[in-house]
Structures are given as structure tokens and as C-alpha cells.
Amino acid sequence: MPIGIMVVHRVKPGMRDEARRVWEASMPDGISANPGHLFYSYMFDRKDPNVIRAFQIYTDQEAAQAYLANENYRQYAAAVGPFLAGPPAISMSEVMWSKGLGDAG
Image (tube, rainbow, N blue to C red; front, side, top):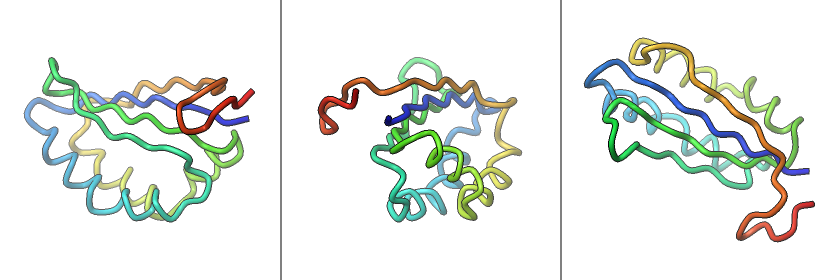
């Protein structure tokens, strides 16, 4: 069953663009090459300039867990750390339906 993950990062004041540069340097290529990613969206909050959200859909729980060991993700996590105000808030959901995925359940 597909797994949806919402990650909310709070960056240190004024550091959102720096965090984005780190993300752009490694993540798009790694995500695009990862068959376990069905969907990925990197988003800036419109009201809070210190919030970044990433919404992902993986093929299954195993694919989501495996990506954490991916080298480009590990490099990103190490490089973005100095710009973050703390650990991200992460929520996981079973995807029951999504436009583009159809009936996942």
C-alpha cells in the first residue's frame, strides 16, 4: 500500500533560501532516480517564512524506509542541519486515493 509522508521543517530565521539551495543541490536528482518515490512536492509556507514542507508518496513502507539510507538523502540531511531550528515534524499516512494514483486501497 502506498505511504504518504508529510515533513514540516522549521528553519532558523532567514535561512529558508539557504535550506532550499542545499535541497536543490542533491535531492531532485536522487528523488527522480528513486523508483520508490511515486510523488514528491517541496513547498514553502505562504504565511510563515521559516517553514518548509515536503509531501511524498512512496510505493510502500519499505521504500520509504530504504530512502533514508540513500546517499543523496544522507548528504542532504547532513548539509541542511545547520539551517534548521530543530528536528522536523513528520506524519505518515496510508494513501487510500490520490489523483494520478487512482484507488490505492
